[in-house]
Every structure is written in C-alpha cells, then in structure tokens.
Length: 132
Image (cartoon, rainbow, N blue to C red; front, top):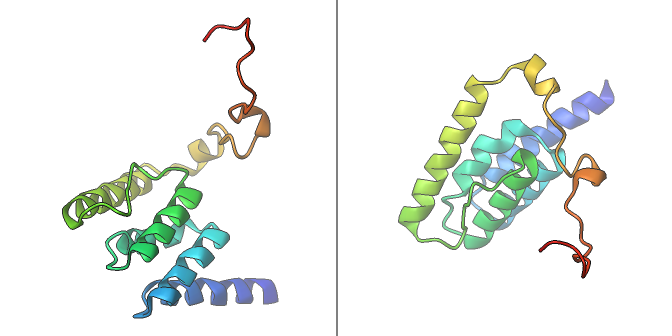
C-alpha cells in the first residue's frame, strides 16, 4: 500500500515538473517520466516537444522514445513550424493508439528487441564470406 502511495506521489511530482516554469524542473520531469515508463505521461511530454528550451525538447523526445519505442522522426533542433508539425504527428499517434487499444491484442503483441536480447540487431560485423 505504501509503495502504491509513493508511486502516485512520484507520478504527480513529474507531472508537475513537466509543467514548471523552470526549464531544469521540466527536464527533471521528463527524466522522471522516462524512468517511470508511464504511457500516461506521453501527452505532457508531447507538449514539451514545442518548449522554448531546446534541452527540454531533447529530454522530452528521449523520454517519449523510451516510453513509446519510437521518436516518429522528431528533431528537437528543428524550426518552430516543423516542431509544431511533428508535435501534431505525435498527438495523432497517441490518439490513434488510444482509440485502437485492445488489452487482449496488446498482450499478444510481439516483444520489442529490448525485451528480448536475441531479437536485437547484432553488433557483430558481417563475415568476409557472407552476403552484403
């Protein structure tokens, strides 16, 4: 019970941090959301993709990639117009994902490579006799 209570406090804390006036607190919030691996934080992180502070945008996309498994091609250094377009792509992605959420189907999806090391790309170079 105490663990659940503390987890709830931590969630509220990073949600408040993500909305702080202080960019350092917003960065801390993105890091905490990533560590919590909480998909419910994704909409707040998407809002940070249009942050005035480039470092906040960078940590927000890192957190989103950790939580969602993709960055959707977002570039935190892009100009305002492109960042707005990419943030809208993220909103559409999350909306579609939420609308298509099927708990039974989701539990039967293939594991991510990070969940199964044997599925991860090999870091070994091609052998000299192999096909390139």
